[in-house]
Image 1: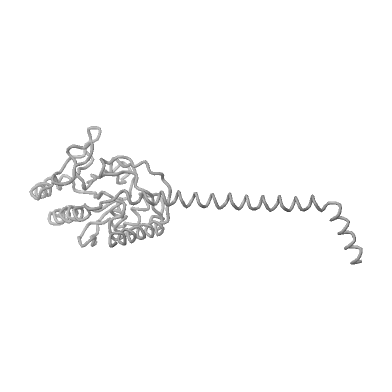
Image 2: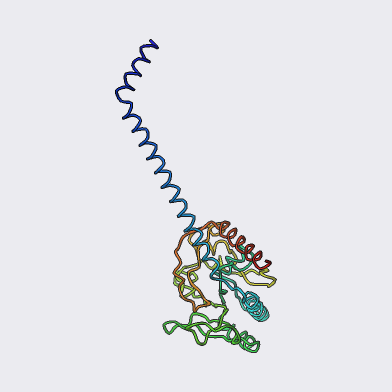
Length: 273
């Protein structure tokens, strides 16, 4: 039986050997080409990812970080002294919970003031005496809060009165459904998630935070993955609160932090040399 099989294989090889060899070679070429296509796609994706990650370095407080901390300290010293209900919100609240610091690529501070008229009456004069400007945020003829900044800070392109950095103050509204809204934002929050406010340490400053900060951020983002996932900033406040035009890709937070740490290390080494 074995001899019969061997003879049959020899006959097949003699009859179709060249064609089989060519088919094998063509199959190998196709496999190599497919593997090359995959590797090129992986390389392009890595290149694109690194290009996107580099954009996280382009926005942030930078040299104005300490000045922003001073803004925050002076603000809460005034509101705490006068018992004005105020709490950090949006990216500032996210920074508190996720980084216990400002988000590295954030470049403004967001605060909700629940006693806004009392804030203007009691705190504004004190802050103005300390060198701050309290500029009303009027949009479409409607007051939506204010911006707080120092006149001796950096000028903002296209905004002759504004200075960088600034604190954005939101004035809350209560809708007919009893939910809290922070114009011009449209997201609606349960009052019990905000109030009564709590106090927490942030950068050595006793600041107000929502009663349930996790619930507030879940509502704001529409998901609960904000501790692990991040996105590029969509506005650049240093340049006039303009849209950055960055894509809305989502990134694993740790990969972004690792990238920024590696870039900072490389910068430090270059400076040492």
